Length: 438
Ligand code: CMX
Image 1 (tube, helix red, strand yellow):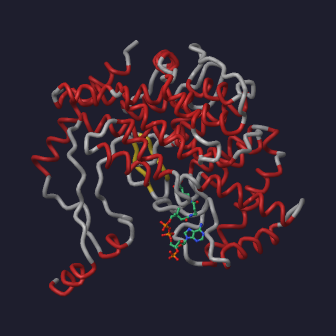
Image 2: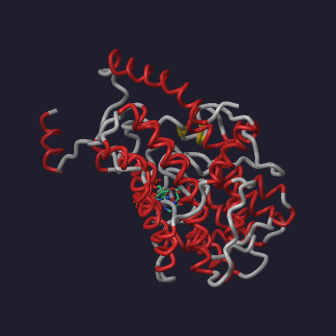
């Protein structure tokens, strides 16, 4: 079977050629216009980044190299004994644009497991953090510290050729992905289950199999399968979202993948982005507490209005690009449908009921461009049902996942020789001048 590296070596030249052609033949072609609303509106809608692995359609949702989520669920190999997509097969697809065989997937799982141990000083660093330090802060700091062993940085210091950038970026990316489960699980154990013995990494298990084991949930097959699906699905959501964009920006300075992804994690830690799944759960539990059992649609509607009238957003609803229910939300809902224990779960029931009411309320409220749920509307609630109730930790799981897409792009950005990112900024005075003179 062909290795990941050899597959990449094969697919990179065609992409380099494609970029060269765009540069030489079409560099002056117009892709859109820049309006004042783009500049003052967080660059929404501005087509300004190259991102290879996935493209987000406002109506259809995400496609990974052209494959929709249901397509991926059909063709990407699961873990042995499992049914759900796993991060390894998603990573292979994101990196190469090809669907891996089960053997290639298993080989990648093994490589990740073999590289999964943490350096001693990183273990000690994590152990030294106060338990009260937010798990995302811990994750970002520990990922940055892994750059101690960066292959990219060492090769850069030695004076590597530009054509070697991508191989060292890949090397670091694989090492980082391999170490994320032990790193993220250590944070969980230290903060929430101190004093328990850490199991060793099992070389025969897939990445999430090991992650679940290290977290202490290895014997919960349903939760492990859910984590596989969730982490694979969440891996990439094109380039403009704050975490992916941050990794891309920082990587464009030739910071190594550890530093680039560490920066991305701090963008993910914001409540409008990755922290939303924790916010959703907090909000749904508060609703449950206030309204008690057998909540009616009418009561949820009132609760939604109360949230909106107090000036807060409804967490888990709306999106910067999507204008339809998020297909990742739908995929997680379908997962819940297949599991009797989730079908009868009060918190999942509340998520479903909220979904039946919230879009109409948000439409009537009239502010958000997208009144439908995003993936976070349910992701944390499933974890909660399975007993992973420490919701400050949820963004860390998102952080393990988003590494797939952000690191893939770093490999492609270096393989394609993309330059330092440096958009032009304008002051309001200059904008007014430009308007007057146009
Ligand atoms: N509830 C109430 N109001 C909302 C809303 C929601 N769920 N979503 C958007 N709005 C409001 C915005 O706050 C904005 O109001 P102002 O004009 O007063 O500033 C207005 O509607 C227009 O916003 P928009 O263009 O529809 O949405 P944005 O692209 O600005 O923001 C997002 C997108 C996700 C930050 C926003 O919808 C939101 O805050 N949602 C709740 C938090 C959430 O679920 N985040 C997770 C997103 C997925 C992820 O990145 O992980």
